[in-house]
Length: 182
Image (cartoon, rainbow, N blue to C red):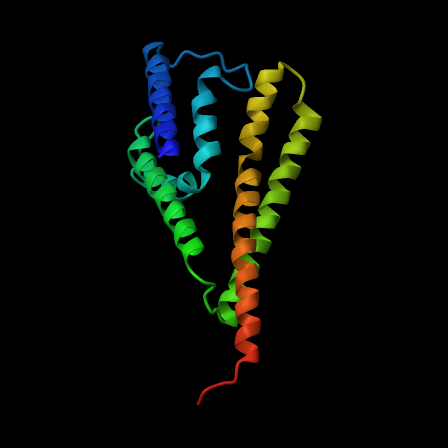
């Protein structure tokens, strides 16, 4: 609920920013590496990257540009947080499920992919910092926040997946030890 309200506030801020930009005739100085009006969008993506990742292809297919893309993104964000909350609550209330080798392998590959994305995003951010990291501290931090957002989310998803993976390891071992029924 809190993240939904925060997302609503950031979305309203982003829509307001786009109205200001449009009222000026899109006349922005493109010399700066980041516009101050991009702060709300950066924070929205930091909080809700999985929902953005899932919903932006549909928004692009429908040719919804900023700020109209929020018509697709905002409901996706609410569904994402609802789904994640229900999943975590449900997992806590249940005993570990019995999982086969296929699910175990799939989770292992998923964790490996997320770790690869984390390392790639971190390396890209480090490369940017080394080559272009001079300038105002606040602008550098906003750019680093934008560059490291995938790494932060992948780390969080790796941690959640590792917990599920650990539970599945226990169930796979238990399945192997139990006698097979014919």
